[in-house]
Length: 283
Image 1 (cartoon, rainbow, N blue to C red):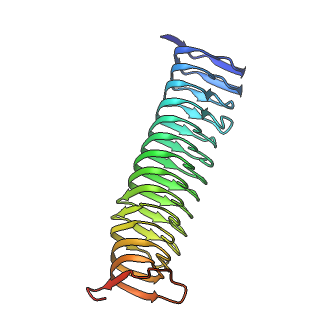
Image 2: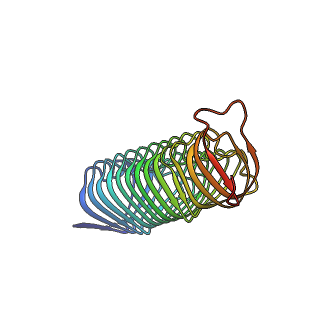
């Protein structure tokens, strides 16, 4: 393995098509595509300031690094990334990638990030300004996670999340096979048009949650005071602890809650219109 220590690069493609390379205390200044078409790269204590540093990279490790705002769209069309103890200030990270492990990473301007990616694992990750995070991604595993940003996880498939706080309007729309454990999900219009969503030991806030959901499962979840008009046109099996402000026109399945403030079953309900609703062990 070749090592480059303490050097600075800038301009166009200064390390283009390199492989089997270790970078230590290296700065990539303003420019484009510093490490494009590379293979087997390790970056330790490096700073990235230019655009598109890692495109079409096959196998790379990034440890204790900084991506400044200028390093936008830094990691695209690549595979097999391990990123640890790193701070990312740039938007539009991670596109069309296969194999991503992020551990103890901060993504501070994560708008339009993690699009069309697969086989993604996040541990101890904090994400901010994350509108449209994880669009059209699949095979995702997340633990110990904090998220701020709307429209997250849209069109995702095969997702498992533990110990998360997700502040996101329109989260989990059009998803398939998503399970969330021991988490807090805050935001309006949660998980409309989802299929096979399961929430276990979760707290849910925001108006009109979980409408148009298909094969929805809730186990031991709680609802906030603003989580009204829930489950419209949903097929579900839900066990809720505590109080639900209101339920509107569920399509089929069952809802069990300690109490429900208002149950709305009107002329707009869709067939088969046979959802069983039980509070305090009485229909």
